[in-house]
Image (cartoon, rainbow, N blue to C red; front, side):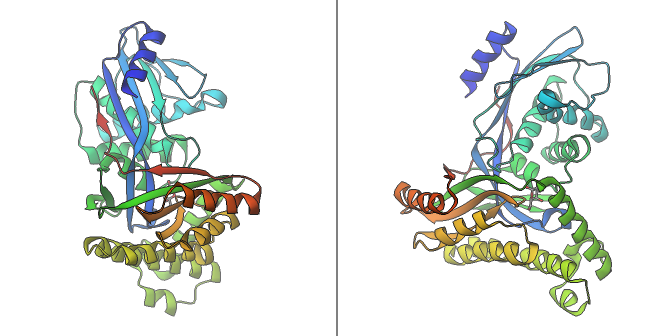
Length: 379
Ligand code: GLA
């Protein structure tokens, strides 16, 4: 990937880049909609991501290009970053990071040539947005000749997503992309936030089944769930749902929708803790049961699953080689993640995809992926 990026950069800009960075995509392992409720979450950085090459310019112009999009955007470094629309809207990720840097007391680079390249499958729910934010943030910081603590970089990237791109996400995606480690999961206590890694027992595999379905209202539904959780917390008299107990939720006379959302979040928080304990004990069967229970709770209580995702989880968990499966990410369409033994082969995955195609008339994409390291400067 690096050679491809450097060659493309030289072809476009007539000189080599000064800085190359990369940041991975992520899988949400367990902890569905716990992050913005102050709870814990477990994710895995994967071995694919977004790469950024950059060279400074001394004429105060910033040029943004990507191997994924035709639009090249040129902007003066002297004016504050303004939101782009239409074909140019991909630039909102690096622009949002530029706008976030001063909020965290970090210096901002002047003019530069910038090229992004990706080996993440698009629209697969693997958080290409967090990957481009983290890779850009690292490149911009390097361009100012400074370094920054990883936790601050992660928060600046999330700030870009919340305040510039306009998605009210929690810290899962940026935290996992920032703190990923090969053969490990990233555990985030979202209250701090505090980041740790947890070893992944050997011999497991990840498979992602991307349905390419997306509820038309997915952004609005995510924001609605966020609001419902805040309303439930307020009704329970706590600042965030992480501060509520299961007994409190049971005892409170919450409106039915809020009661279901709160029940999901409180139980899911307990499942994340139980998953860490099961991973440390090497009990993969227990981990798998927790993953599948998480999906069941998303289906019935958080109501962010779909018939397509439910079908995949049912088909996958019927296999003796699958520990567990669940929707991964925000939900309302998107992808299912399965944790499998090494025996779960291409033919098994194909059988699931064929059954899905027979039922829904389209094939899901299958991605076999490995864990990978977090965001880093390559050169
Ligand atoms: C999306 C968001 C995350 C998180 C998940 C649900 O991926 O970006 O912050 O809220 O949904 O767990």
